[in-house]
Image (cartoon, rainbow, N blue to C red):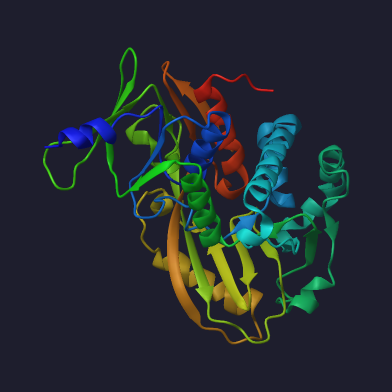
Length: 381
């Protein structure tokens, strides 16, 4: 049972955001930037964001050559270019909002490892560069085969390397801590460990039913407008949405004294990705080895994929360098029939910004801004 003071002080807001990850916090911040006096509440079910916001590998990227070729084939050039633009502009907004030094942003370039199966993609690199040139005003991709030996990769496995000077890396923990600090600085109230059970739109408000951990009686928050920013966990509120969760497996090594490479790296259409973190290597991916088991919202390890990641570290990425695995974890992403994120009004008082396709770092800030525009009734520029 709540007290008079609790009912009078803690339950009513102008805006409520469900989900405290990149999109949720970016939405709340964007609302406060538009309406500084608004009372904004963010509800997060975990102690930390529950999906991938604090569990990703820390890539500030917009798509490798082979990944973009798949997007062009599936979506067409216009839609694929629009998606790259969304990712790039989202990254710039994130950098402007936080400041590079405050969330460990380093633009050390990105590389794609080209094996025999991917060699045909090199023939289309010129076409992709021509498509991207109006957006970036420079050539994005170029061949850099000399990097195979320089970086110490297995030369029998890797046929070429494609270099992209525009990619970067971030410290995921710092990024989220800075977003939380900025939200609190703006007067946004953030409650963690809050399990939202139900959203019900009424004539003048949306009622947000929350599990009370100290009582069988639920707690009811309310606001005239509510944002749903729960990405892979959104089926609870939007059962008809075309969305499937996708778990990502990640590991990190102990520091490697003579690590030969810096930057971010991809291969196999983006299904594998690794980077340096100082002298450590963070390596993730392999979801395509076991799609069925990785189509889940459970934060567990997949032994088969973890073993495959370790094997590829040993045989391809660090063939001549001993290493020790320091830690392993997983995060939950959201995918659909294509890579377009979902921005949608739900009824008259709710907006959903979800299904980021594994590109939350890139898309999250821009998606939050778009959700805030719909919530506040602002027309898009």
